[in-house]
Amino acid sequence: MERILGLDLGTTSLGWAVIEHDSGQNAGKVVAMGVRIFPEGLDEKLAPRNQTRRKERLARRQRHRRQKRRQHLAEKLADFGLLPDVKTPAWGELMALDPYPLRARALLEPLPLHHLGRAIYHLARLRGFASARIADGKKDAAEIKEEGEVKEQIKTLRQKLAGRTLGTFLASVFFFCKI
Image 1 (cartoon, one colour):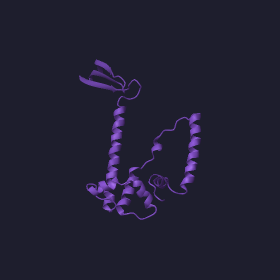
Image 2 (cartoon, helix red, strand yellow):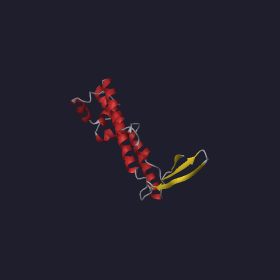
Image 3 (cartoon, one colour):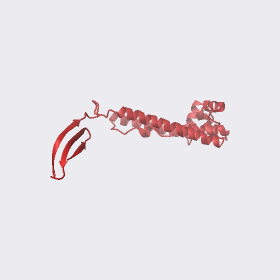
Image 4 (spheres, one colour):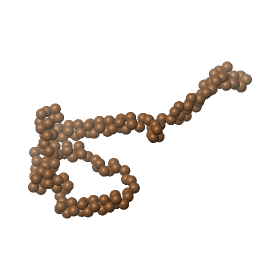
């Protein structure tokens, strides 16, 4: 006689049976069996219970990856002489500079290498397009009207830009740079 344990694994249940089998007589009998049903892993809103933990873990991973990318870029820019070493006081002084006027000036005149590195570092820090992460939804009449107003304002802004980038325009408005 041999004993066989059979398992049936489901998403919210576990079925089991113990069978004694006699291979000589080709017969067997069920010794015991049962099932264990687990409650679904959903909360009252029918969302997975670990969804909050998973989102927080994903945010931590993304933050860590972003920090690593910035650290790697800073090291590479320092290798090429565009930034001072991160552990020096010169790093803090350079990071205290406002990068927008530096970026605007870089379009018109040569900058010192560390200032150019600061502008590049700032561009890399702001990479990505925030509104690309916003999901499209249905639009009602008020939103469509707002879109028309926004499009008009965009058209007016484009005329004010007169071929300049938005960053240079904003730098000229807020920092009084002559660009």
